[in-house]
Length: 320
Image (cartoon, rainbow, N blue to C red; front, side, top):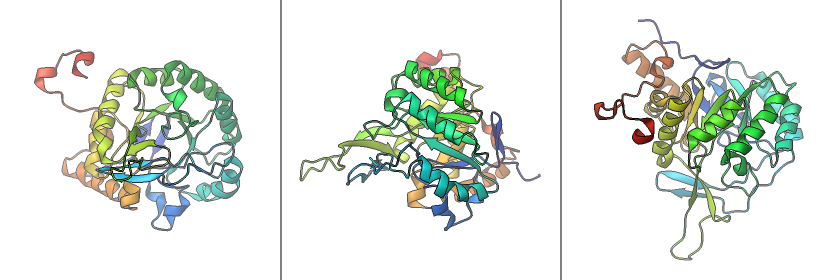
């Protein structure tokens, strides 16, 4: 049997493979390029970029929890001007992976200004809007939990760009499908889900929170079941919208689970801290998985989760 074609399509955006890296866990790409050739990835997603530089939250701002990590970095970044001047030259040289820039704003106007400033840079293939950061006072969370605000933001940004537009969704909502419909209906080309879950860790000796901002974003294997459930729900609600799965992806088998639930691609996040070469290992494992099962493409897995017989025909609201 011929070698499987691991390229995938996210709407109009074609990736050489479905393994992306998650914003905030991979720097601006150059940092990991010292360890391996990042040209092998499907896409590089940058740290969140804001209009002005941000110093981030005070320390301590990271704490390891069972099966995960609690963080409150606070969107620390170099700012728009320094990003264009210092970071884009490296990204411009990449051959193979798509370049996705993650954006964070405090208002609709700020997001629109960021998008307009990057629109003319052809090396940028797509934009991912961080409308769901749970670990900063003003980092987009008010947009990501309200369908009307989500729609307003996406519609305004859509008018300012022709690039592939991704909305990164928050799991800290009552109905993920409702937010997804609002984002897609307003013009988002694809959806990333999920961002981190809001969490808290406490020191029983000092009686103090483990991180300075008290609450932060929980990531890693602990959140994978929640992420899978939400990808599955959104795929059922919007089967034609390209989804990017995020949450506790450490192995090829983890990635396959997301494909089965409806994701067309995945982003590797916390695993980068544990094993910097995790994305490449996941890609190689995926190729082996496809070969072993005589599948021609990851797209043959898309949404193929098999519902137990007892649930077949049960309305989604009951089954989910």
